Amino acid sequence: MGEISSFQLGVIGALFLSVASSVSIVICNKALMSNLGFPFATTLTSWHLMVTYCTLHVAHRLNLFESKPVDTKTVVLFGMLNGISIGFLNLSLGFNSVGFYQMTKLAIIPFTVMLETIFLNKQFSSRIRLSLFLLLVGVGIASVTDLQLNLMGTVLSLLAIMTTCVGQILTNTIQKRLSVSSTQLLYQSAPFQAAILFVSGPFLDQCLTNKNVFAYKYSPVVLAFIILSCLISVSVNFSTFLVIGKTSPVTYQVLGHLKTCLVLGFGYTLLHDPFTERNLIGILIAIGGMGLYSYFCTQESKKKQGDLCLGSSQIKDKETAALLAGVHQDKQSHEVKKSSKDSVV
Image 1 (cartoon, one colour):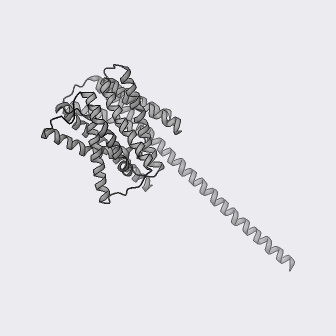
Image 2 (cartoon, rainbow, N blue to C red):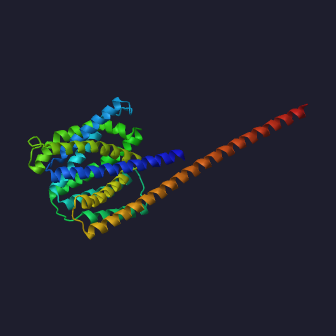
Image 3 (tube, rainbow, N blue to C red):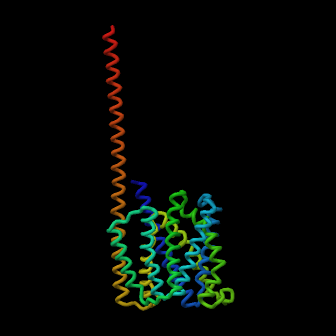
């Protein structure tokens, strides 16, 4: 029971860290890009990953965690896939309307459920599927406004969905099958993610903004916000791997939509963004879906733990019964031998 409670505390801590750091970095980046006019999102993400790797390298040098070697091919492909998925998400935002981009993010959950069901034989109960449906409807009402379709944007959105889903499923699968922690996996893969975005980032940003990141005039305020964003990103990247490793890709996406609702609320409160009744209704429906998802997951987890305990107790009972039967049989054979000796005498 102690191990279970400590695991649950670890999950709660990881969820809280992910929400707090993600909402913080969204507010910071919104101020950096919208208010200060720094539009280079992909290049900024590469800097995030570089700072994350440097921070983990220092932590490793200080013996705060042990580095576990992972197959080089696996790490390189995994890191490149995650880097490519970030690039596709940014391109999807650039070539689509904000509403269609939000629909792209909403599609990640059902696509992840489909992939895990087909390839990992994972079962999702009807109650879980219902709660996810309510969540997606609520977030859709709250965040999706205009839907403008175009061929290039649609193709980029599909590629973003596929690479993001596969990357998050692999984040969970690699940690469990290779017995590596979230910190160890992030430390091994961050350089490759950073490298592919550092090379492609300036080109992608120039395609999307028609501006050159190297020709941008960096004021002290912009530099301060970039440094703050990079520092917060260490917590964001770490908590992302931690949450996916301790829970599941679907739970991480549910958490992501909670962040969307919080960002909408903070945007209205702190930045005085427009907020309508539709936003409020959508957020309330989404929160209801999240609550049901959390409740149903907890109930099913308790049921699985109960079944495991029942199964182990039944195995112990069978072993005990077999042991007693063996002892009884030995006793009977001993008595038969004794009686045969007496008859010979």
